[in-house]
Image (cartoon, rainbow, N blue to C red):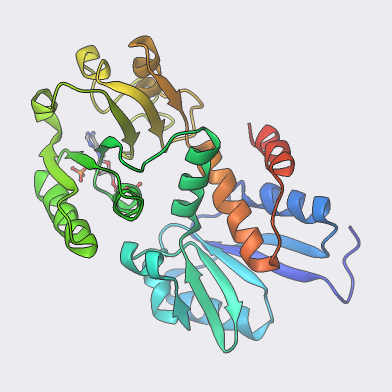
Length: 283
Ligand code: ATR
């Protein structure tokens, strides 16, 4: 692509940003769509966050992604915020509107689209959600939004699971999230579950760990989604597979959060074949 007077810019705000795979997603999409657009990472220090968002608007930047550690803080500098992103309390995509940016959470929309593409549904499901940090928080709200029947929220610190459960249950006006301490997993009903792994345990380089090591636990899982994508098969996923369940990693979530951001910025629909092409590149 030739950079010229019409080139539009999108980018990523975070610290660090040097490891990001988002430029691969967006620059490949732009090429495939024939859009005159480039996507670059911006390493932003905390005290410069407001200036970065306002400056991006001033520079006519089309859209931004926001990553760690600013997904929550950035909300203070936005013109508007999408309802689900507001509930979750985290924004990873800024879409240019009149007078500023509107914040969205395409991480969670991306997870949902990834699940749909794997034919995994949340509606009416019994779910085990492992972890109550930032990533699991978004998943808990998604489960509320998509009307999962029951979500057993297991966390090492029970108090964090209880707080999150209260928040989601009151946001949706029903007792769908049940908080539990992670080491009391034996008390789970004797049924088969969809499991979503949202803790940081098993993330590279700690690849030989799983948040629950007991093989018995894994017999309860028919399908599992690990939000981690590095390594491509986490120990958690391996234990699920060894117990006869299906397991996916978080790479498709990463892919679709990018695709949905690109769609919001450019008001296009990316066809599934293009998504698959980028998925192969990311793998
Ligand atoms: P993220 O934003 O990626 O979710 P986070 O907010 O730091 O990161 O949350 C990390 C999650 O992994 C938490 O649920 C954490 O449990 P606590 O709330 O008890 O801290 C969980 N976690 C991290 N290390 C863990 C470990 N060794 N065993 C069990 N859970 C762990």
